[in-house]
Amino acid sequence: MTLAADWDGSPIALFADGKPSRPNAAAIAETPGALWDWYRIPAKAHYGVHLQGSEPHTICFDRPLEIRPHHIQRLVDGWLLAESRGGRAAVYDQSGHFLRSLNLGDGIEDIQTTPNDQIWVSYFDEGVYGSEIGRYGAVCFDYHGNLQFKYGEFAERHGLPYIDDCYAMNVNGAGDVWLSYYSDFPLVHLHDFVLEHAWANFGAMGKGFAVRDEVVVYLWEGQLFSAHLRSPKTPEILQTLDESGVTLLQLPKRSLEYALRGPWLAMNLGSAVYLSL
Image (cartoon, rainbow, N blue to C red):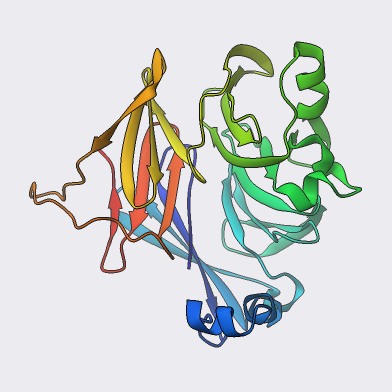
């Protein structure tokens, strides 16, 4: 299962049906290529489960053998599924019927869409140091796959560090985009393609973070932290409580599925998916 979130913070889960079980850590350690071999096995079907209010909505996607998606995002009138390697992506209508293909570039770290069907894509190092669009580190496409924004060019104009590997991105529904990336680990805030602020050497925040008012929340080594934008070097450990106020166990460090978007956090702890208030 892959866990994502839409621009309202509602969780979206992507399931593959008809694949063997994902290899565990021991199998990967014994055979380093085991995980990649598993990814290449096509699924017989892909399903999306989107929580709308308190009701889950399930979508079965057409043409499952033509794409091996790792990313799922909501569009205004449909859905976007995309692979991490190779750049292949597919647009579907609301019922899961295939509409068309897109090429979003190789080495995709994350994809987040907006209410006006912008498609923000960030890239890990193999995409950044490849020969495709990923060399810009983070980009924005429109609904038809046309480039609207290239962060590499933007960073050069504003004297910002270049992206070697975009660890984390947060795109909300109001035009705000936040980026945290290797190797300098600044925190960069854009609004409608304009630089709002950049915090130099903010520090690593793992693979995702949420922004609530002037506080950044992120997961690191099985703990939930908060850092104030005015004093990012003194993060605080946050308690994780369920709806009854009972403290959850320390979050597992491995195989934890989570999604952070806007001010919201969703975590899959195995027994349940927990959403932040």
